[in-house]
Image 1 (spheres, rainbow, N blue to C red):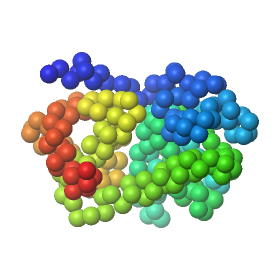
Image 2 (cartoon, rainbow, N blue to C red; image 1 turned 90 degrees about the vertical axis):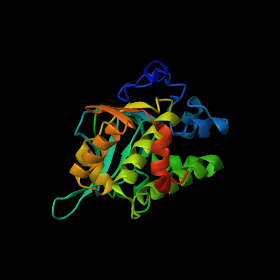
Image 3 (cartoon, rainbow, N blue to C red; image 1 turned 180 degrees about the horizontal axis):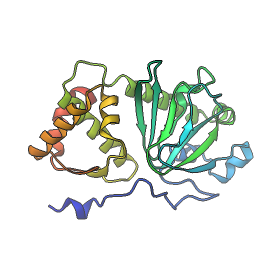
Length: 251
């Protein structure tokens, strides 16, 4: 079967052109919630909630910095955003990678300041939501409030996902499969995608040495689970990858 023809690779830096001043982009993290409540994008102006487009942010540009006052959450419209901390010894600790349709900044709600840094890994476009206005709107729209709680719960779950005593193979398989599922949920190919993050960043996130991650990826290639050309990944055997990642993803 020619998976290249069925699932053409999509560049995550391309901004969806189906959204405008009156309509949400299909990848918007909030569109279905708003629409299910009977609120379209034009009606948000009546609530004084303006969705602001920001960007482009170029690779290495900061979206926000640790300790800065928190006043907005943002949905990634295109590209990939890395969140991380730097400890007092200058060591980086990667918290996550955020793809189109996903939200950054939710972990700042409690302390009113951003608790980590967020940086663009490629060309990034954002939709910015004023959080005070979002909170006011959520008090009127129960489904929006529930959605915010779900997103915060998901962030907590993702942060603890790799805390167990898992092998390097299990960690890398779960990471790749997690990316595949997240991309598929936003209409991208589940089988062919580009790793916008470096191997060093992946290793840091998985709490592994970079050489360990590289060794696992080479072995996955030899075993015909994957095809990798630089940062371009094609999953060749989804069922074996799922079996390997089952202990971490649990489904």
